[in-house]
Image (cartoon, rainbow, N blue to C red; front, top):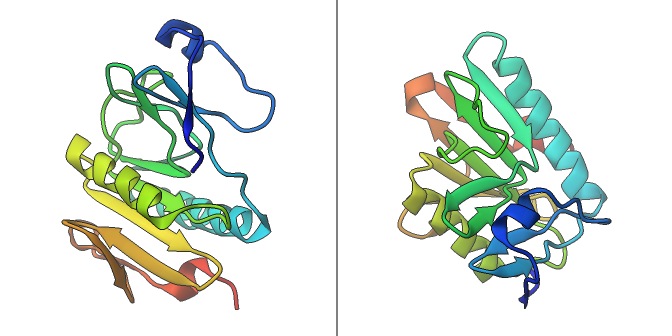
Length: 169
């Protein structure tokens, strides 16, 4: 995650701006660059989207990659994947927390910055905040802190997500 640069944009302008490379986050008046994904990041993102989209055929889950979310006034974050449970969001920029927010590490990501993002998601009301490291094939969850886990569990859905589900060997 790169440091922010003072935004010359209001929130309204940010919400109507397309950036030439990768979408930026908006944090309290600062535009924040996101790290460029590499192939393993992209592949893991695709596998997760397919996994949850297929699951969405039997459970009401709605998968959205790279979706701007309004965490609070002047705070817009973009998880790699947002998964909503039940009804699909009706707003183009949802201001209600998704059921699951997923971040996938890119080579230039700094773990403390990604951990802070996961902490923010949980504080906002996201039930599950997960991190996938496609380079080491490790999975993490954020509860009170970042914790590596062998399986990501969603008890109310009777679902376990294992490395075999999202990382190709």
